[in-house]
Image (cartoon, rainbow, N blue to C red; front, top):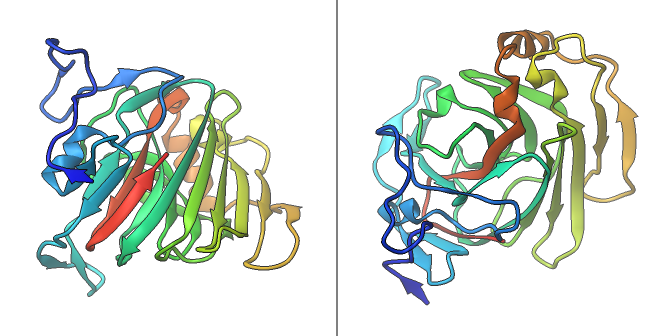
Length: 252
């Protein structure tokens, strides 16, 4: 059942470790199962076990600079900061509508905090199934993609913070694999001369077809150079999803 409250992600009687107005309490552990942070309650309901979030009100629409009308963004993130190691997530769209600005991925930071989306560094899968890298206000689309996000699909994300590698995989509503994309985000860590990423993309049907990208977009290399000096942040971070419409999603 969906409840209005969940236990806070810090020990009973203790204060959340807040050091800034935009920061939220978190746990830093490699063994805790992924669950939504209790701050999600400001935008919807959480299940008692913390795995399911329901957003029932889309909020007012705003005019975007490109002429589109978009609902206000709702940023969801897990309650655990991940530092180094390999981390695996399963994000399922249980019901509702997928908005134009919806996406799912991993934010690189040294602590879990709310911030303007244009001040984030992240890897993510957008509504259209395109694998992207965000470096502040710059978004680079990598030459690999999956099917569009839709009701019933599950997105599996594996992030290796030690090897700077990640994989998005999607299952259709019947539980059948329908796409995968492996890539490296090493160039985002400050080395603009890093070797081209090894990419593997699987179309909605058919076998996997690994290939080596002949070259990365120029703006991707520019983004890598701009990120120089902040590589340590990419060794830690947290799972994050953006939802805009009325939707129910789970995280495991």
